[in-house]
Picture 1: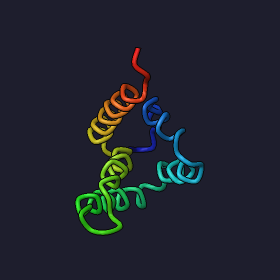
Picture 2 (picture 1 turned 135 degrees about the horizontal axis):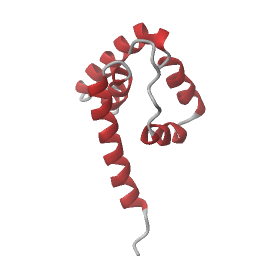
Picture 3 (picture 1 turned 60 degrees about the vertical axis):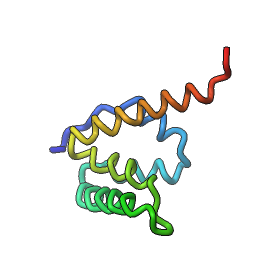
Picture 4 (picture 1 turned 180 degrees about the horizontal axis):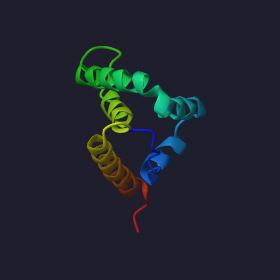
Length: 100
């Protein structure tokens, strides 16, 4: 991303609104353009940690978090991650809604 702001995605905003305030503030700090040099290595580290989720402490949750961070700088990753987030939220809503 070369200094331009990406329009916030409603699916991502919904997820962020459900998270605790410290997590939202950390994400807001990480997506600033000047934090790119922290965001990319952290995103790759989270993805590698997610791939090693069979080890204690590491978990599969690290994969999507790393993809969200990397997606700030690589548009195809952002599109794929937000698409999967939308599908997951749709699935979750369908399971949580009461039967009619």
